[in-house]
Length: 553
Image (cartoon, rainbow, N blue to C red; front, side):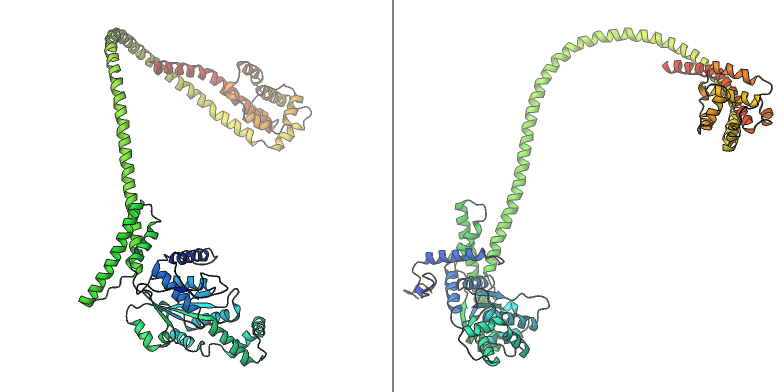
């Protein structure tokens, strides 16, 4: 203590690193800035878990103590404090200040003693010869890592003698000796005895000198007392640093750092930080009073304080969001009211104009109504005339429909013959066609039939023209696709010159050629159908005219 007021802090890293002389810190702000620079440098390292530490006065004092113990030869530290007090973070920062490696366990579901000892072997070899940049190593071990109490037995052996008995088998020690790097470092140390026992002893001595333990324990509950009774080396072979409750000044400083990340006015941020610090400090005092009066222990930890700040941030964000939504709704509502006010103003102006137009239009409407009455009278007269005409046209439509039905009946009589003729033509195959093409000069009757076919197809008559058409593969298709609905009158007159002959019958033609008989049937059927259409079509047209007149009525 200095002047009976504060702890005297000594460090050796503020001066030239080559001298390493411990000196009392007279400028605390300078020490804080140096540690902040080192913390920033640590956080910028690749593949490290970034630390967000508030270096208030007590944290800096703990940092100086931990650094001092870890830099002592074979020094180990026991950090006793509740969760969230900064034991792990400050140990990592001190290891970085002292240029030491830092490692700790990564507990899995099936983590056991074998895994723990494998980790110890890695740390032994790292601190003895495998360290890439530094050999000195800090191993952070906390009470949360005690999966099995046998872990503490190995920790006690490390604290007592520096090594765990029987950690390595002879084969494993032989493997270590055979690695080239350990032999090189052994010789560089000035050793000449290359016996296995000498190298093994040198290896374990290097581990004792370079491996430092930082054991983190919580004073909560009876567990720590049980550990100290069963494993006294935890107390006897370590330097104990108690992490006491944060003072109100430290709480306010932590709150300030946390609240700096929240959008708040500066005057409110300061008052809020003071309020948070006062609330937590008061809670700690009341917890002590409850323990004294009611014999009930209630732990108020730094983690609770951090959760308080996070809870404030969460509630503030939720409330800001809620108020923001309400403000948006209010602004939208006011905007709509303003738009409605403008609309009402415009509508009022338009209604004044419309009222004048309505007055003016009323006179026009009265005049139009008088004209409309006159036109209605005329329309009534026309309606009477149209009704009379409708009765007349309906009667004509009935007559036209009857005529069209009769015409359709006549046309239906011709349809069977037409269908039979088409079927007969469809039955003709290449054999019949080839038979007719083979004739150089056909019989007269066959020639007559083929000429009549050529007339319907509107092709030149004569056997030469017929043979040309027979050579066309689409000859029969052109017959079947003939437009029989629009055969001209002059074509029918030409056909009559052929069909009036007594021998122009299918029965007679069958004696000459089956193909000629089929085509004769087809010609006859097409002629009958076309003649029927000449009678039916005028009747159909008359019916259509009557229906059109009726529709217009």
